[in-house]
Amino acid sequence: VNHLLGIKYLNKKDIQLIFETADHFKEVINRSIKKVPTLRDITIANIFFENSTRTRLSFELAEKRLSADVVNFSAAQSSVKKGETLIDTVNNILSMKVDMVVMRHPNPGAGIFLSKHVKASIVNAGDGAHEHPTQALLDSFSIREKLGDVGGKNIVIVGDILHSRVALSNIFALKLQGANVKVCGPKTLIPKHITSLGVEVETDLRKALEWCDVANMLRVQNERMDISYFPSTREYTQQFGVNKQLLDSLDKQIVIMHPGPINRGVEITSDVADSDQSIILHQVENGVAIRMAVLYLLASKIK
Ligand code: CP
Image (cartoon, rainbow, N blue to C red):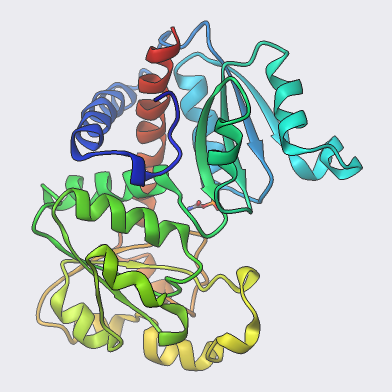
């Protein structure tokens, strides 16, 4: 398959191969060799129908470090605003001899839909509340870097599980690698079917933190929800926010993660986000090596 549409379509060996390839690229970057000629004859379009800082910039950096030619498309400044469809938009971009498309879109399944209608490799950079595969890969890669093999580790994903593509992709990736996974958050923000994915639900944050090796803190995605579903921000922070006092009261030191963007003082306080327990900026750093690996492996099937 010439696409990365979701972790759901990968197996454990695929993930291992991506990590080994990312290890290599990370080593190359760390040797201050910021550019390799690997994708010199490949052109990649990054098409974003939703806002992004980390994903868009790290894909672009990954592409440039692999020497691909890059074009960036932002829906807000495009002819999508004049009514052009997704398929027409992408087919017009592809007619300019583009080989791969990295797409973020607000609609779940947009990448899967596109992959059935256009002739190019599609990489899902986040599709609504569905999947964000490269985020889950960089998250597991960061856990592996900090704690070793992800298999057997206790990971809790805290927050708005219902609207989170990061949560779903992480659950698929962590379960494939043999991790024990719990989700923790208000009942209104946890989908009923979640236990069918092999994860447990814990609504008491302290218990979840006492159990885990790693807590992945998620932002409440107000933009994807009817405000009436949601406890007030103050109540949310009281019950599901992590702060230094809470972490210091545990009898072990856990690893704190966050995919960003952070709402400081809501799901996580600054003294935790910026502490030695946090690997948040390592996650961002690893995003470039993981995306280089994904693009390299997909492009090797095109060449
Ligand atoms: N983690 C993540 O997807 O961040 P951006 O929305 O800024 O890309």
